[in-house]
Image (cartoon, rainbow, N blue to C red):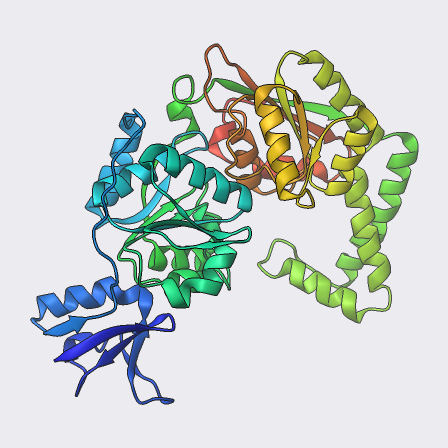
Length: 460
C-alpha cells in the first residue's frame, strides 16, 4: 500500500506510481526520484484520496485529538460567534478581521476548544509570545509549549514567533492540526511564508485588525496559505460596547524659523534629486528606484542624507516636544502612551520629561517590568517607538499621543487600538501632532483612509 510521509517540511508519496487524482500536488524530485508535495497541501491531498478512493497509509499527519476545557468563565460575544461560524463554514480556513480589543485571541481559543486538536500559534514578537502563553495557561490550565525568546519546548498547544517557526517547522510541521497566525499580515514575507508552507495543518485561522495592505502578491499568499477574509468587523461596530468610545484630535504645530529653514533646504536637495532622476513614488518600485539612483549618482549620498534630515525635522521639532508635555499635564490622571516613529525621538522625550522609554533595544525582563508598572499605575506614561504597535495588551491606556509615524494605515489603526480596550466610564482619545508646512501632512491624510477615522477628525 502507498504511504504518505512528512520529511523536511514536505510531503512524500511512497508507492509504485502516483494516482492521477494527486498529480495536481506532487512533482517528481529529480534529486531523489521521489514524488514530493508541499506540506501545506496535506488537507487537500487527503481529501482527494478519500473522494477518489485512493488507499494509503498516512504517516504525515502526526497528531491526535487533545482534551481542552475552559477553566476561566468567558462566553463568546455575538461578533466572536459570528466570526467562528463564518470560519467553520469555510472549511475551517480563513482570516477574521477584528479590531484591536475585539477579542481575536479569545476567538482563537474558542476555535481550539471546539476543534480539540493540537495547535500551533504564530506571533510576530516576544511580547506577544509571552502574552499568548499566559492567556492559554489561564484558560486551559495546562503547560504550553514555547518557541522563541530562548525557549524550545513543544507541547500539544505551542506558541512560536514567526522567526522560530521558520527554523523549526521542517521538523515539527506535522505535529499540529490547527495553525493560528496572529497578526497574519506578517505571513506573506519572503521568509515567513515558508513556515506556513512547511506545516501540514489542514485547519488555519488568521487574525489581524488590518489584513489588507493593497499588495496583490501578498494577498495571494494569504489566500493560499490561510484562506479569504471570512469575517470583518469594523471599529464602529464595537465602539461604546466591546470597545471604548473614542475621539481623534489633530494638533497642528509649527517649526521654528531655524527648523523651517533647514527643512526647506534639505527638502529642496531631495526633491531636485528625485525630479532629475524621474523617480515616481506613486509606482510600486518608487523607493527601490530612489535607492538605486542614490547608489549610482555622484550626489546620491547628499540627496539621501537630505531626505533623512528633512524627515527627521518634520517628525520632531521643538513645538512637538512642548505639545507632548502639555498633553501629559492635561491628562495627568490617565494612562498615556506616547508613540514615535524612531528611537531617537522616543529617547529625547524620555530624557526631557524623565519618562520610561520602551524600544526594540529594551531587554526582555526590563520590558516586562515596564509594562507591569504601566498596568498597575506606577508608570502613568510610557514612551515607545514601534514596539507597542501590535498586539500587546494594555487595557489601562486611555490616551495616545502620536508624535510621529509613517503613512501606513495599518500602523495607525494598530496604535489607535492600544487605547480602545473597554473599561467602565472610559473615554479614549488619540492625539496626532502634525508639523504644518511639511510633507507630514500627506502622511496623515493617507493614514486617515481607514474607516476607524471616519467622523472622528476634522479637516487638515
